[in-house]
Length: 366
Image (cartoon, rainbow, N blue to C red):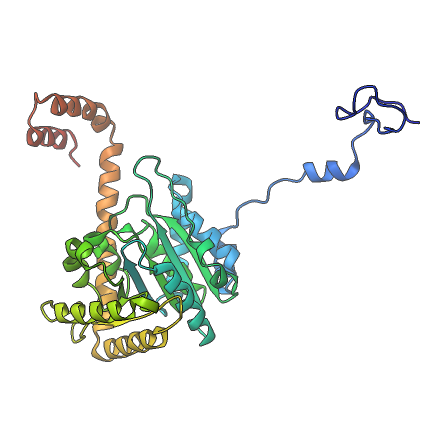
């Protein structure tokens, strides 16, 4: 029998029936050396990412999105070069924003709607924006798990991203992500946003079609946000119109259509209306797509579709200027030195807020 010590799990006073022994290794197995000596593969180059995205490689698309979402200064130039090279291949999709209060069934609708679109020959990208905690700054990012069937399809791509506290519940780099998805050949881009009410104006500035999901019996709870979001919507869908909810859903639909008469249209020459749907039973999905197709066809023929796209690029440009100016301001050495003192004086009430703002702006002059 080989010499060696008994293993720790051997019972006390065990006899010869426990023949297992722990032996001291005299050399390291060759396979282990090879495995441990392997270096981690380096991150793909911009050339590799461009080529991979153009051929529809979903793995490289995900890595490219990670690159542009990074806040690391060393990733900025590579990310912008990637966007520059793929920009000519973008713009060929229909961008659809889906919003609504939590529990309205947005994820269920998007999964079944996406599967239906895949069956019609489309390629579907879903950008699911998950709310970030105001305390821990973390996000669950569970939408991909909830869209299990859709995520299995080779013609789909699902990317959950944290909102990062961005206004409108839209991740800061969503616009860049749309460009990458379009360059990868996805002709339908669905953006599921955090249902946070009037701040949803942000998503309106980056999509072609804006869909608001409601549920029956929640009218009183939505009065505070209804006006702000409804006037941005191109279609309102009353979801969960199934079982005992059918009558309530139809009533809610009629009430919403009545309310829409008092609002200006979100898109010129388009009449927003409310319809019912059951995402879980896949009812009403075909009708929703017919409405979206009609909207796009009408918008392109009138020029409204293209004019909106141009305005959205300008809004993106202006928002990035604001972000860059703020970053430069807070990174300034003189501002960093003076700001804590001014904050303390404002907090203690020894200095008026407006005067403090004037002083900090005097310190920072371009």
